[in-house]
Length: 142
Image (cartoon, rainbow, N blue to C red; front, side, top):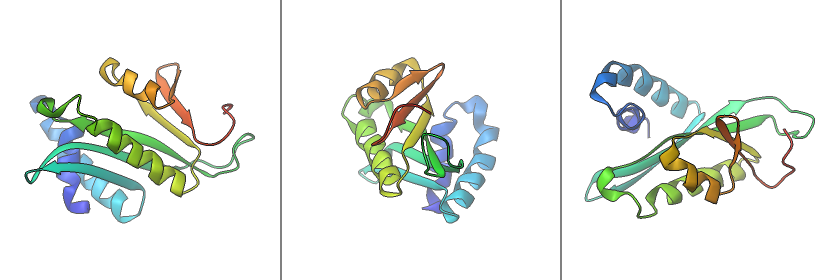
């Protein structure tokens, strides 16, 4: 929900030094959700968000190997440190991938840290020079 945008912004900018970045990003997320261009998923335990993941939908235009005009970018994957290694990020990323597939999107990209690389590789993402790409149900060429 757009009301969750401040929480999502805190996941994207968790460091206190990045505090000033949160409000503009939260405003963007809320607007993108309203326009249907950001899909967010969160997991709550005891009323608190312990994990989240989002999908930004990008109007890309058809390409030679993919007639689908939309692509997606996986963003804001976050798990509270006390709740890591319990499958929460995997479940939320899979929810994002399911939402992409339901919309006919075949290309999902992301940027990752070393900590997240194993998760994304296990889900089929391939390294593409600093980015990772997953092709859903189609050829692997761009």
